[in-house]
Every structure is written in C-alpha cells, then in structure tokens.
Amino acid sequence: MRLFACIALTFVLFGCGESDKKETIEQKEEIVYDMYEPSEMAILMNQMYEHNMKVKQDILDGKTPTQFPMDFLKIHSAEMTKASDRNETFESFSKLFIATEKEIFNDESTVDIKERFNNAVNLCVACHQTSCTGPIPRIKKLLIN
Ligand code: HEC
Image (cartoon, rainbow, N blue to C red; front, side, top):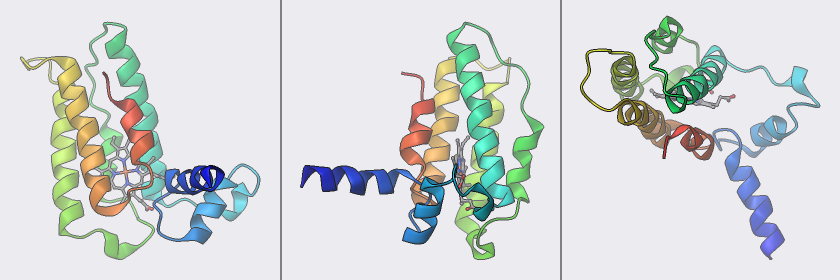
C-alpha cells in the first residue's frame, strides 16, 4: 500500500499531469528522448528554471544580480503544447511574472533581494496552479528559505 502511494506520487511529480501517456514518456525521457518533442514554451520554462537556479546561487553567495534575462520575454510569444492554453489567465499571470522577475534586477529597489526573488518564484507557482501543476514541487525548490 505504501509502495503504491510512492509510485502514485512519482507520477504526480512529472509533467503537467494532463495525460498518463505524456507522463510515462517524460519519465522515460532519457531513454526515449527523441520521441518527446518539447514545445517552445516547455524549453523556455526549463531555461527559466536553470537561470533562476543560478540567480538563487548568486544571491546566496552575496552577489547582486543586475541583468534581467531578456529571453524571459519569450513567454509572451512562445508556442505552447496546446494553443488554447494562452488564455486571459495565462496572459495576466505572464505579465505579472515578468514585472516581478524584473524587480529582482532593479538595483534601486529597497526590498530585500531574497524577498524579491521569492516573489518571482511564487508567481511561477501561482501561474502553474492555474494551468500546469506537475512541475510545482520542482519549482518550489527555487525558493530561498
Ligand atoms: C504565465 C504562466 C506561467 C508562468 C509565470 C510560469 N510557467 Fe512554467 N509552465 C506554464 C505552462 C502553461 C507550462 C506548459 C507549457 C507547455 O506544455 O507548452 C509550463 C511548463 C513548465 C515546466 C515543464 C516544462 C517541460 O519540460 O514540460 C517547468 C519546469 C516550468 N514551467 C517552470 C517554470 C518556472 C521555474 C517558472 C518561473 C521562473 C515558470 N514556470 C513560470 C505556465 C507558466
């Protein structure tokens, strides 16, 4: 019974939880990589994840990041797995996210850098709660405690 719970949890942790088939493919990504074609948006999302991981490390090392990664603006145009996903909710969350992410690099801000960084990560999570819940546990690892 406990084993079953673990397996179920593993499924929840991968992908957007839209279909079992997609999750299975994502879990086996390394082996059958050429069968899984990520969308432009999925590629961008993974780049944003990696970039923010570096920003987090810089902040922890006491460095102040100063350059907003312009590539993040692609969130407004990148092709998604399902075209219908780019709805009003997505648009407003993406604008809010970009504004909050830009604040991390605003050297005139009086708000603590860790707080500004966490605000941006919380917006990743907030949008994901409306559209794509799968990666949330992974995204939360970006948060600075
Ligand atoms: C405005 C909404 C929104 C915001 C903000 C957002 N995401 Fe996403 N994210 C999505 C959607 C929708 C998808 C699914 C894209 C697709 O399948 O085409 C996704 C997919 C992902 C994926 C899975 C990609 C894959 O390989 O399938 C990861 C990881 C991810 N996002 C991380 C992040 C991180 C980290 C942030 C913040 C830096 C972030 N997201 C901000 C909506 C958002």
